[in-house]
Length: 293
Ligand SMILES: *[C@@H]1O[C@H](CO)[C@@H](O)[C@H](O)[C@H]1NC(C)=O
Image 1: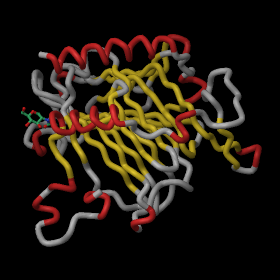
Image 2 (image 1 turned 180 degrees about the horizontal axis):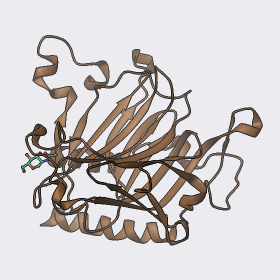
Image 3 (image 1 turned 90 degrees about the vertical axis):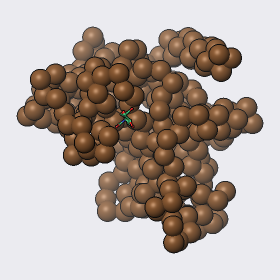
């Protein structure tokens, strides 16, 4: 009980914070890139929706490229029977040895929980999956999913609650994303060959079209400026009026002790898969160095 009360307080204080922050317009910041009209920007750029039916899913990407940033988005996921659907929300660079920071939401049959899947790719190498349950129904309301990406950390957050911290361990020979700019992407698509209960549960198309919604995008980030020969400019808040010449606090931010404890609490109560402790994976070999830190 005490624990759920703490969560409730956190959720409420975060909602207040989100309302105070100025959100950028979807028209200005994103292009709907596929789905033949299934992706829509509504309410003067305040809302974006993606849809999936038997013929196609849909997706969008940011116009800008980021090289570090604190990026927040509010998502409301496919409600009801969402089995077989995947809502992917991620940062990715281009090219063969790409970097990527992933949130993926794997749907489920009505009443069964979504899985939040996370991964980090560095120079083309991923296989760093960690999966979580959420402590609320992600289809009832909007919740904020954040990526804090700075030269020392990649921190995944859910309603401001840190769930995963991928640290820069270049000193230990582990590559860290720091030189390839990334765009933000999201898509809603059918993955019923693997997504739900290992692929056993298929998409029930009688519930189509499936739909997910987005609002409250905010990026405090360094963006690539084409006019400046691809140099980055770090502003306080992309897409809103702030034009500070230097990056904000996020650039040096890491988890203080309290937030480290919160993350450990989430991981011990809500983490359902961790590649570092998968016996099938590292039965013979040694887990990668970042696992032993
Ligand atoms: C769906 O629900 C089942 C039963 O509760 C659970 O085992 C599974 O992890 C859930 N999520 C997915 C994506 O299959």
